[in-house]
Length: 376
Ligand SMILES: *Cc1c(COP(=O)(O)O)cnc(C)c1O
Image (cartoon, rainbow, N blue to C red; front, side):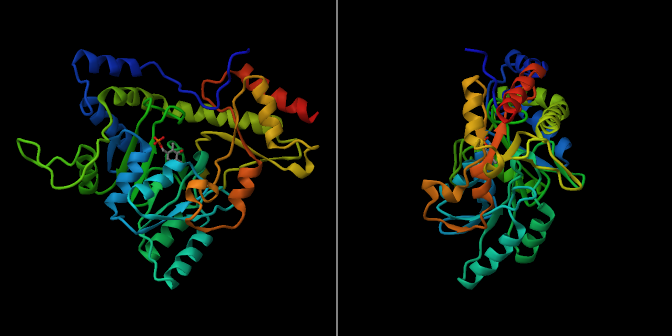
């Protein structure tokens, strides 16, 4: 079997091991320490957010973010339907109810028009959502300014899910710096990784301090262990944060590499009539975390998304359908949803191509030639 070509593999820069070694030499093997502080500072200076708390995962960051804007049992939370379950599951951890909002075709993210319709419609049922979770999927910034305007108009705070969008910008402003609180993920498949990790970012020092407090079992200030609130064990380890510090050094390089892979796919495959690529709208800069195509089955010689995926699989090349919308997931079948058909269409016809920043030119050529061969 030929060597596997991954969808999105970790890509170390070389400096990571030095931060990890320092942690070993100083015996800072703990869920706090100098690397955690250093990594938080790196995130703040990169995104221009004022404060950051490094956590065990992006999902944990969403959970704390929702908690900090006051979501609790029985509340409603507006959530992009076209996303990974990590965006939505924490709503249920809190006993709250998701209301899924479909996407628009320009960015594949939360449709602001449908979002406002949903808010107005829910108001008629005396429901006022407590938060909204837009996502920048595959690194493509959502129509975030329009979403922020709706958030301000109806006074519903935004938890920005920027888990896939570190390094992306909208009108020159970093993803991770929109809305009331922002979430990042450093899972192994993301644009940079700490092997597993996440962060919650915000501009209010007290709120992020509270996040750190909740993330360390809500331990009150006392010599013994005193607790007046329920907390979580969500703090990032000093070892993982060391990897993160090394990865921050190469983040812009990783963005450039992912963008180059996307550009090459586009250049070499856009002549295939059935394919559509997701262009960057004006003033939008995507980190191109994953390169994705849409395959129109009506003009693709009987070949659909699955045919391409299965063909690549025979060559040990990993590709993946786009995210299955949350409103189509069995676990969320009883939740409220506002649809327009977009995410269902994207799920039916979309494919993520191998996009790792350390993917060789030859491997890219193999993927491209295989697909070209199918449509020749
Ligand atoms: C990866 C991801 C998350 C969750 O991050 P984890 O660190 O894996 O918990 C949340 N939302 C989106 C859109 C993601 O891609």
